[in-house]
Length: 202
Image 1: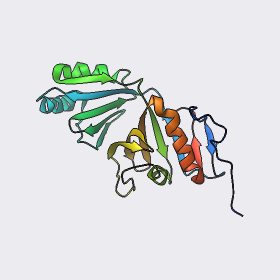
Image 2 (image 1 turned 90 degrees about the horizontal axis):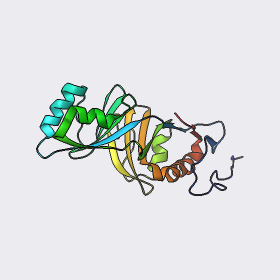
Image 3 (image 1 turned 30 degrees about the horizontal axis):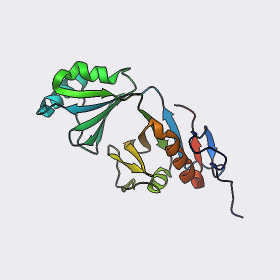
Image 4 (image 1 turned 180 degrees about the vertical axis):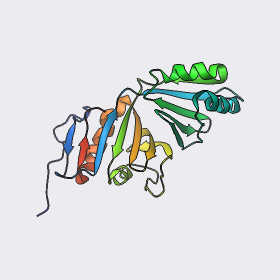
């Protein structure tokens, strides 16, 4: 007999972040989500004509290459994501103030804005991540197409996100803090058929 379960969001107010726990099919975890705490986040935009100088300074001062749009590069605890031509997102679990680190290195070459309080980040893992995201994504997230090192600034279930793959089995997702409840509700609802494990905090 097929297994049935009550919808995990039936009794949860729409603006409430789902609590940690297991949702959907018991004894299966097709998708696991873990919120990443302590990230320092900043946006980076070059001054007019300064992109070449920024590229060289980033390479010399921070040992990082500037990625093209829709790409991500990693250097230890730091990540740079190309979100659009000439626009980047920097994340770090090492620097307590990545915006300050970038300003110290680049000076007037770039406009840098701290975004640490504006976003939350999630690690997504499991064999059904791509299937879950495909239910709300506007782009092709087939793991054979969306390879490690690729990134996208896109819409997922009408919610603006930045998504990237750090490793073969690891997807990361950044969303505005005000959309945390909506995003997690989408993940709970979409991954319940595979079994969804939501960790409290990472």
